[in-house]
Length: 117
Image (cartoon, rainbow, N blue to C red):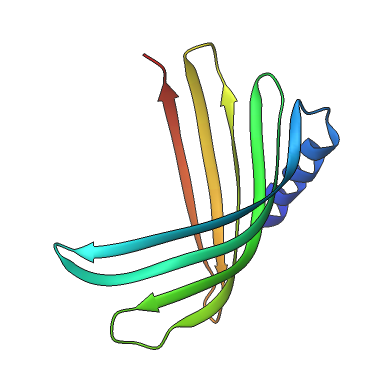
């Protein structure tokens, strides 16, 4: 599945984009149970994105710093790819596939719609 997503991103890169370029993404996601801190993940990624009149896409990857409360921190590799497609002037559909590569590789997906009011 990841190979297919990477292939789509590569083919998209060869199309004529209105914008394309490299970027640096540093993102932290923390989790809490009520007010009790549980864990956090920090992505340190380099990415590439592109777009045209009706769609945009990105692919990024790099280091992942994982910290769980009361445990030693870990450093792993992670990656994400995704994009969005404009259905019409007010509606778009987006999706993302992400992966963490460690002793037990894990994958996640995200899909949704955005409606402009």
